[in-house]
Amino acid sequence: MTTVTPTAGALERLADEIASCEACPRLVAWRREVGAVRRAAYANDEYWARPLPGFGDPSASLLIVGLAPAAHGGNRTGRMFTGDRSGDFLFAALHRAGFANRAESRWRDDGLELSDVFISAAVRCAPPENKPTPDERAACSGFLRRELELLTKVRVILALGAFALEALFRLEEIAGTGEHRHRRPRFAHGLEVAIGDPTAERTLICSYHPSQRNVFTGLLTATSFDAVLTRAGELGGAN
Image (tube, rainbow, N blue to C red; front, side):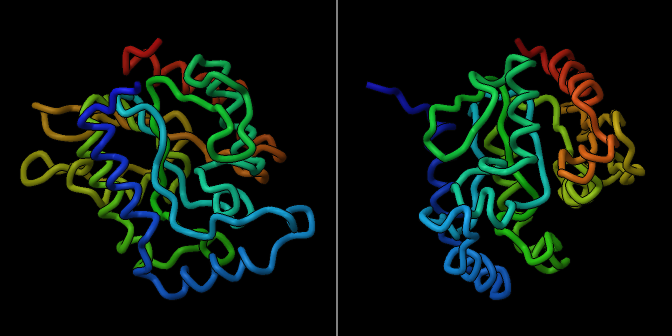
C-alpha cells in the first residue's frame, strides 16, 4: 500500500482543481478545438484537452517552470513536456543528471518517475501560437503560487525562458515584499539570483527554453543545459 504524504495529498487536490479550471474562455475554446481537430499523426489519440497541473517529487529541492503546455504535447498527453520535442530534450537531460528514471516520456502514466524535481508552468492551458495574454497569465498565477507554497523543500527554481522568469517575479514568494523586494533581473542563460526574504532564501536559475527553435539553432545545447542542471543540483543538495 502506497502512503500518501500530506504534501502529496495536497498537491493531488490542487491538481484536480487545476484540471477542472475554465477561467479563460479563449484558452478553453482553443484547447478543446485542438483536441477535436487532431493532427493526423495523433488521430487515434484521446487528447487530454484540459489544464495541466505540475508533477514530480513532492519533496523536490528543484522546481522547473516552463511557459505553457504544447498544443499537441502536454495538451494531448496530459502531462507537462510529455510527447513533444521540448520534452524529449528536457527528460533526456534530467535522466543524465539523475533526476529521472528514464530518458523519454510519451504519455502520462508511462512509468516516468522524477526524483528531487517538480515540473510546472506559468500557464496551464495550451495557448494559440504559444502566446498567452497578460490576463491569462494572471489568471494562472495563483496555481503556481500554491504549488510553490506546498513544495516546502524547494531550494532552487529553474526558469525556462524569459516568460517563466517574468511570471515568477510577479509572485511575492519570489520577488519578496517591502525592504526585501527584489527587482526582476534581465534574463540571461545561467543567471543566478537569490530570491525570497533572508529567512527563506532560495536561488533562481535561468536557462533558455528547450524549444525546437532554441535547440535547432544551437542557442541551447545539451552541454549548456547539463551545466545548468548540475549547478541546480549543487545548490539544492540533490543526488
